[in-house]
Length: 591
Image (cartoon, rainbow, N blue to C red; front, side):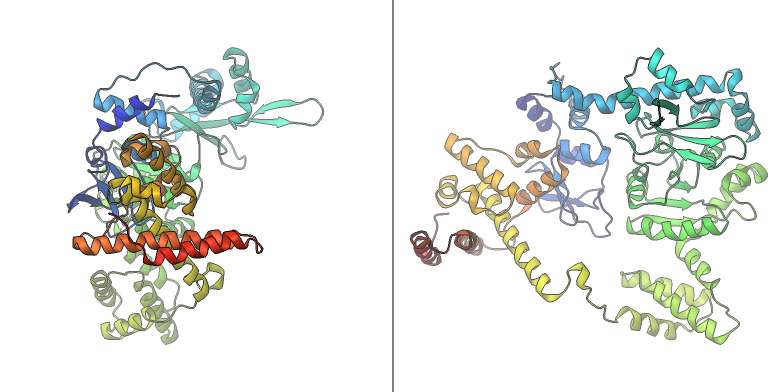
């Protein structure tokens, strides 16, 4: 949906970026900017900066950047129009009713139609469960001790026979086959006459909702002994299981200060019914960094409540480093002698589960206990192997204070000589890591990356100073054209700046970032330009010298690039470039 630029800019101006980001990221003032831990990648040292002067954010770690509209889009996974509406409501701005182009209507309708299809499918399954045809499904849920309130709260349903949903959506709701085929709710037979089958049948249905309570997929549990026991919707334009957590729509509003990470639908539902409304689960897939970053938006503490069998413990071991790398504090809850939260609560009750939460083990203790089980500690050789493996695991702690604290704790826990363990950790932590040519880490490639990085930084600084007035507009236009810049976004910004100088206009970084808001990668590159600056502690003469040399370097690089592109016999142009190269070495600029 198109909104006039002046309306977009009014919404942006009336939403101070520090106020917009503060509810999501804890910010601390440092000089003229604010800093915090980046919400878009895992880090322990704040590299996420917010500039109130430029009304933009930029992460020096992962390169994410933009203005307030871009932040809401990236953090909440909203479209440009959705983010603009959120900020307009926040600032009390009434957005005009605008007509969509045909292309915009088609683009917007694909996702909206899928939301509508899944909403209507959820309604169909919901009422079928409560009809005579859903008796088998209701009997199963009652057998799992779910109350009517819980069944209704999670919108549980039932898929009876194949074909019922298709007829309902096609004939009663009027959806086109093109839309239904994109939903993943149906299967098609191409042999002979084309036939359509419901993907789910004879299954209890678990609607999967996004954080805004919109149904985006389903999980289905087969009735009887069929395989597979659970089936999820396939990926669609509105559903990606690697970035979706079941139960998040409720857990995000929990008053508890932690999330309980489970394995499946029934564990989440059982925990919510028992009063633990902070439970979530990944959807039949390995836990991913995407899941961890979603959790990080809502809490910094996670308690793993995965199954107590071998598969559950392996899943916990895989999830722990992912959660830690996201900067989350992790503990592991023991449900022994029961297999999962559902079984535990049925047998022991919610109060006993609350006690287990309080007793949840430090994640590193859990990891080291699992490690200990792999070795025979009654055998000297096995004991040595365990201690070396334990020392290896201690090298994961980059912070020396944290590593020493854990080293002292596990040395006492497993009765290991602390001095010997410390020596082994030092030996393992200090050993050389071989260069892997496949990653491009050999010296020549490192040199090339360093050179390319230097060119990029020079271009960013020159453009940033030109936009901020450190390089006067008329000087910039006289010295540079967009072709002097090596990167696409840099060329675009140079062209925009030249047009603004000719028109006598000034553009703010945040206003320019509006044009890149719908492409997070380009928005980050543009934000990187506006985040480039001269050293704050340099005196005026030093800053001027740095800027003079940056301009000269960028002009030299442009001459080199143009020379390399010339035909070998174009002597006239080559001589002209050589004369320009000599002038660049001696000229100075009016700054």
